[in-house]
Length: 497
Image 1 (cartoon, helix red, strand yellow):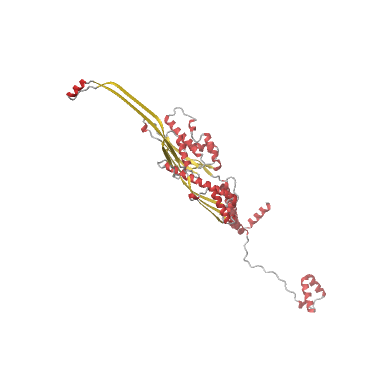
Image 2 (image 1 turned 135 degrees about the vertical axis):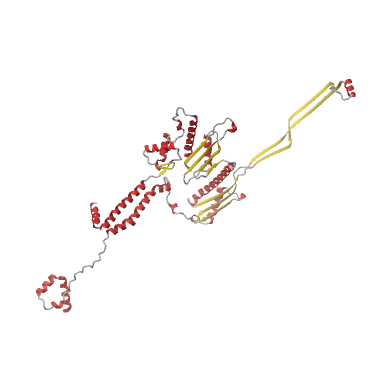
């Protein structure tokens, strides 16, 4: 480490003044970028704790967050906290009664007016309903408003209670129609005098999810029919694919089913009468007899003749006898009430695709077709269709990767993308900025001065030493310049030869 620092020091002092300034700026920039990247990686992901809060509730929540020294951010009337603490804080706030539900009545003030009690009750009821609806996994946030009118002495003047509910749906999730209706009936059951038709539910984009009207029952029936049809189709598809997975392999066969369902409900009542099987049900016999004189009624006669006649015959002797018999016969009747089943399958259309690599010939395709017909209950009389074909499947590379356990691939990428981005950023910074700059700083520029001449020894002239030098001179020459002496000897040998 010490040698490394000495080397850096040596390089630094060998630089010019301009390069020293650039070198110091480079080190400072590197540390600053690393520090900013570190802060960005460790910055917590904020998530909504509560939104659309009353000022009093928001004030109480902020006080608790400051008391627990938890970082937070306020965006309008929304409070955001670190993602990993959201559910813990919600439970903590609910346990301490910070978000008001029926905890409003834990501390009742003496002398509280009836109006204040009514307002507190509505706030508490809205808070409890908000908590309950927020338990749905698709709901991120919820807001409930309830209007309960004053009670009237006259029934015809009594107004009905109403409610409005706003839901914030989590990204990528939806609420089914039956779940929305469930929320409406939940609120209606919790508020006295509130009917489901007086409830309006909409999402945070302003789309109406529930609005009771005259066509609501028809719409509900249609949704139920479509859901039933999808369930029938999925059930048949699952049967086919489960069977073929054992034959051609998992993921090597795809099945799609189209089912035409008859939703008409027909009630037939038949009454059959048998006229030859009459049975006496009741018999009534009546006998009447009357003997003696019957008085003639007196009245004001219209003419004199009738008056005289009445006076002479005041009593008429008479005998009356009458018999009657009534017999009631019960005719044999057979009543048949026939109700055709709703949801009967009228026709099936089945398409099956098998990976071509798993099929050896048309015989296997025909066998698979017969198996599919048996699995779905093929009926030729109602026009069912089954088609089986083989096609070469293309499997994407991501399907070949092993499935990730735990929280899934999306959650893994969500948690690990920051370190990955930071690593790529620092690597690019080093390769395209720091490394070229360091190389430029440490490279010594070439001098433009004329290079010095290298001294070259003059060659030995053999003519000058031939026949002139003595043995002593030759000895000194060989001693001083042995390499040159060897060349001289070679030249002599050539000449002598």
